[in-house]
Amino acid sequence: MNASSLQNLHDIIVPQPVAWFPPASGWYALSFSLFLLGSWFLVKKYLLWKRNKYRREALLELSELKNRLADRGMYGQLLPQIPRLVKRTAIVAYGRNMVASLSGDDWLNFLDITGSTKLFSKEGGQLLTDCSYQSVAKLDQFTSKQVTDLHKAVLHWIRKHQTSFPLTGHTSI
Image (cartoon, rainbow, N blue to C red):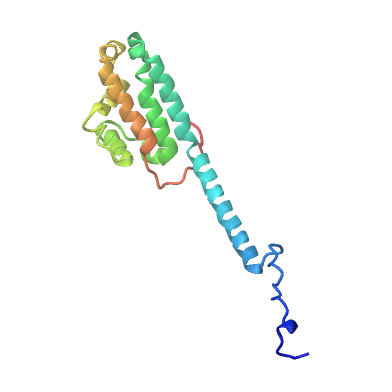
């Protein structure tokens, strides 16, 4: 036989496909890194959720008050609960030392600054101080628009206030 004959040629031998398992060590490192990153993300989300428990409680209480305020005859009895709710929420978020002594314009300015708004010093939120000190007869004279504006201001503040202070002690309202 002739060495250059086509008879002596064989088909190309294709190697076996590369196995998917076990993966290379780089895949183990990537998987472990993704696991750590995912765990860190979940822990951060859980801590944020836990830290904002007071907000959820305050929003629930505000919602219940709003439903009860649908009866205009209840303004005198229910409106004083709104400033108490805001004050309790602020004490949980910022601490008693910072919040408890605030009143009047200082209190409204504090709410505006921490809520990044002007709803308390310039708009319907000004009624918050009236709700604390007015008689039941005066509170019953508020219009539904005034009460709605107050509710919107308080709702905005509870949802949006920013605090860089750690929560200490109290975790519920």
